[in-house]
Every structure is written in structure tokens, then in C-alpha cells.
Length: 593
Image (cartoon, rainbow, N blue to C red; front, side, top):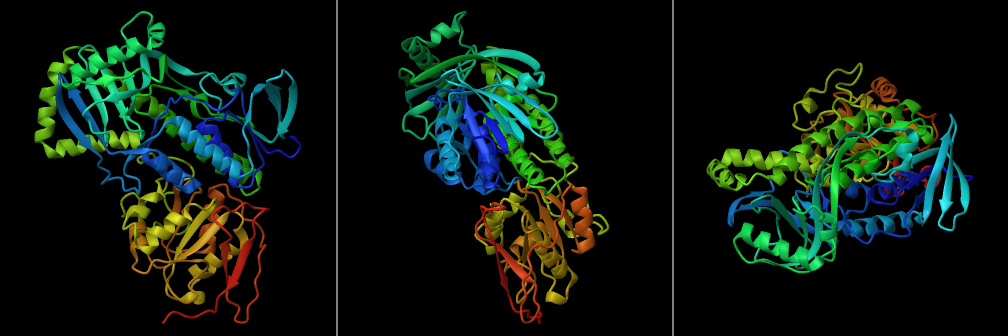
């Protein structure tokens, strides 16, 4: 069964499912195993933040997430029976087509992702545990133990551990979890009768601590979080469903200032969370992602979101190397980019944890005065809203310090127009441009283009058609590298370059700062890698070399009566090298007038 496998993914939670999906979508042969007997029936994570929604859009899975979840656009705080403040969603400085967080049970998110991987031919193998592995320069030899006790040897090119906080993969690699243990919290999913509008997350100071309330899409169902269970035997108290309901009802009624009735929880969990992370995320041919690499407080709902971003970051790099389109050193950038994110995450969740807990009883006296000032100063309120949202949304995450972010094109000079556009600099997410006039043709077409599994080279038409050097360079790049590079010509008419991307009103060029003949190179995960003011073959060669990419020999040739370069169009946004075809269409060359 494992003779032709390329990747073994261990762990079928949201992170492992995302990794398996993106590896398979890029044409790799993947096996997905999980030690559990079947899918989880309870949900730890409930929030899908804007950047993850953008990622799900690229994966083609965002539709069911939006359908089954509830959009949250506010954070409201209460203390001593008074509403302190409502902080509404404000993404003005972080443009996105998804300016909200979706509240959805992790079980539903996993179901959506399982259906997605099944469409790619992957079924989760439940009851299969990783017992151990060894690796050398060419392969990984894993020992899998089935639920009936039988063992199986599985040989693969790569192993990805997404097996949670008690990760076998991490332990076998001897990667230490560095950090500290923190406080004990209680989670519960329960029916709640309240006058609160279910369009916000609520923080309620109860006197000695705080509680949080998160509304599910199911009417009347809420996720409740108590930061101070208040008993030496908290785990035992969690099993007393009636007692939990009575205590939650009393505390929420006191903090909110109106009667709240909490029904017996469908599920409760008491846990002592930790704030820990690994110092590196791979050894040789073995990688870790998600909770296998970092564990932390659930205060800002970052765990699942961060893990999915890691899976996406790793998958395209692994596919590029396995398929021979990039050097092995590209894989080093996985840890280089994601370890600093994990480190920053621990800091931000530590701050969020402190703010959420507010154990000091005096806090309920001081908070009304503090937020009275915030309400009276609009600029301060906006700053707080944007800071809170920015830290949770994932939209400010960038790889500007990565070696895959080139500050200017080698040999081409800086792209002054692009450099002057907010958000548009190497290492930053390019999806911001799809939110600028989202109904305009150019931004809409870019959103569709980002679903392609390949790198994207955007080349702005310079009005000279085939006679222009940028059009020639774009055609050459498309001809040589169709397996891993999508080349799109923005704007222009007639034959302005390969695979036209419509931008009739110039909205996309303006958003990206693209001048005629200019270009932008976008990574498969939607981050800008490089841009320049004038596209040329030499500039691209130097950029590809700096990014560890390996241009392939000329593989597609199309002859036409007038010798026009071909326009290359993939059969769908799910392009799998070796399985899907590249359709070539020759267009008559018409010079710009």
C-alpha cells in the first residue's frame, strides 16, 4: 500500500486535514492516519479568523464554513451588571473580503475538510497509530500500529506530524516544548437563555474572575469559558452538569445585570493550558505543525488558525521540492518563517490571557472608569479595535524578514510605484488587493487566480504587444515553467501577453502599484515574493535563483501562422502536475494602437 506514497500525514484534525488536502491538490500521493477510533465528537476550537478564511478560499473550502458558521463582528465587555463597551469590527487598515470571524464548531470544520480530502481521493485511516520511525537521506520508514494490534511498515519520502500536543512525531524527533504551564480553565457547550444579541463575543467580569460567551450558529447554543473554576476538584465538578449550569447562570446573571439561564451542558472540559513551543519545526524529512509544534492559551482562539497556516505554508514548499521545481533548501524556510510566528503568538496569547482572566476583584471597579474614557475618545476606541482585531485576525502576519521576500528585483531596481502602495511589499499578503473594489473585474479575477496551486506572475501590459520586452519575458516564463508558474497579463488588449487577466478600469494595477511593464511574483500561499518596475528574462532568472526555484526546460511549444506566443490556461484552478493538462491557445498578435 505504501510503495508509491510520497507523504505520510499523522493526525486528522484541522491541521492534518489541511496539510493532506494541499499536498494532494498539488499532485502528491498522500496517506492520512489518526490513532483515534473515529472523528472527534466535541470541539475545542470554535473561531475561524479572517486570514484563515482567505486561506480556505484559496483551498476552495470556504463556502461550507460560511454556510455552517455564524459571523461575529464585535467584542462586548460587561462588569458589575453594566455594559462597558462594544468594540465593532474595524478592518479599515487591513482590507479583506472576510471582515469578520466565523464561529463554527471544530467538528464541523473537520467534517468540511474531510469531505474536501475525500474528493481528492484520500480517506482518513482511523485507529492507526504511529509507533515509531527512522529516516535517512532518501526516505522515512514509519511503523504503523493498527487497532487490532498488527503492525505495518510504511516507506514514504516525507512525514508530517500534526498529531497534537502529545505528538509522537515531536517526541521521536526529541524537539523540546519550551515554555510554562498556566492556569486551569473550564469550557462548556450549553443552551443559554439570554437577551444578548448573538452577533458578538461577550466578556463578563464576575467579581473574582471572568467568563466568555461565544454564540454558535445553532440558535440558543453558546460556548462558555470560565477562567477560574474555583474548586480544588475542578475536573470532578465538570462532570456535575447541573452544578455547572447553576454556577454559570448565577455568575453570568450577576455580571450582565439581567437573568441568564444556562441549561445542562452538552459537553464540559477542564484543562490546564500551557504556553510552550518548539525551537525548530523539522529534522531532515520529518516536520511538525499545529499543536505538535506549539500549545498555548485559547484566549484569542489562535491555535487551529495558526496550525492551518502552517500546513498551507509547508504543503506548497514540500510539493515544489518533491516535484523537482525547487531546491531542498526551500524547506528550511518553513521553520524560518513559522517559528517566529509561534514565538510572537505565545507573547500575544499571554497578554490576551491576562486581559481575559482579570482575577483581581478591583478590576470590576476600575474597568468602568477606563472604558468611559475610551467611549469618549473615538480615536482611542478605533485604535483599540484595530489592535485587538489585528492581533487575532492573522491579517497582519507577514514574512517580510523571510529570505523569500526580495525587497527589490535583482538587477531591476526598486518598483517605486508598488513600494508606495500600502500593504504591497514583499512578504505581505496579496489578498488585500481583492478587497479593493471587490466587484471590479481585476480584483475579482485576482481572487480566482489565487486559488491556483502554483506561483503567480502578474505582468502589466506595456501597450507594445509582442514587440515589448515584458510580453516576451512573460511568454518565455509561461512556456518554460507552466508546471509550477501561472503567468497572467494584467490589462491591455490584442495580444498583450500570455493568459490575460482582465482589469478594464485599472483597479487591480492601482491597488498593486503596477506600472506598464511592471510585474509582481506571488507565492502559492498568497504572499508577495518580489516585484519590479520592468519585467525582463534576466530579472526573472535572478529572482528564481534567489527564491531557490528551478526553471524547467522548454516543454510546451505551439506553432501559429503569425508566430504569436501561446496563452497558457490550466484546465482548472486545481492543477495537478502529471495528472492535469495544460491547454494551449494561440491568439493573433495585434499591436496596441
